[in-house]
Image (cartoon, rainbow, N blue to C red; front, side, top):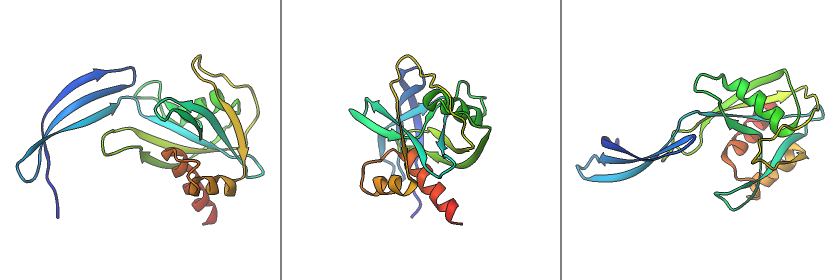
Length: 180
């Protein structure tokens, strides 16, 4: 069955630094109306899976307020402008969050992080031939690095330890691409 919804109105409820929150009035296929929340992520984002020469990957451990706990993730961040190439965003975030630099960054996959209510689009890259350097964290960031075997990270995903969608997508996509 195909459902046809129609947006009747959109009201801006909150305007933030990178997110706008709207209340949409929707007409459903059966003619009823309903209010839906919509979060607009104005900039879009990129992330990068840093892979060392021995195949181990670098993850960042940081506190996530929405989850009220620390998470293990791949380096990620918003674009500086809507026109910024996400490859440049990934390269910048790699250097800022891990201290590593790479000129060997290749596209892996794109995702929409939470399509039911948010339009955030994330391009995911893989960085190889890493060169160590120093982290350049934003003032509000506190990030520790963890270097782990790919199989170990996959197990952490299946055990529910790593649940971050961009990280799961990156690890599993990279693991599948390594098989083929």
